[in-house]
Amino acid sequence: MKEILIDMEKCMGCKSCEIACRIAHSETKNIYTAIFERKLPQKRVYVESIDGFPVPIQCRHCEEAPCTISCMTGALYKDGDGITCYNESICVGCFMCVMVCPFGIINRNRYEKKIVKCDRCPDREISACVEACPTKALTYKEVEEFSIDKRKRYLTEFVNFDNSN
Image (tube, rainbow, N blue to C red; front, top):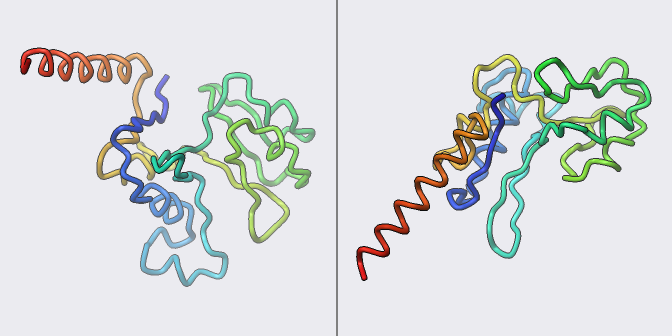
């Protein structure tokens, strides 16, 4: 199964992922008109700075997701692909999911007593945040493929460093 994975060494903190997320979840899907919408779109990915290093984070779609376990109405649930989905129509706005999320990325909808969270852009082949990342710090691939790429990059740097001495 593919995941949205972060290569923190590549992130430069430009927040293109945040902007793309807002636009993808806007009514008009247009950067020039979204800022005039009655309900401004909310992002579902957050670029936080930790000790001066930018770190993009969004829902990790945990295998045993605390948010789905704590949701008393079943508004948060796992689909057949392991994605943590949200059915807004049955959400009662208790915010238990916000309280138990270990990553702190489930947020309150500004306009109603509901939540907003990453849905991996189900109407798109690749999530907007991944597609917008200019440095490819965010990727959508199999975990094993991501690990292989990181190992190859590390070994290439190691061999090049070793040869320069």
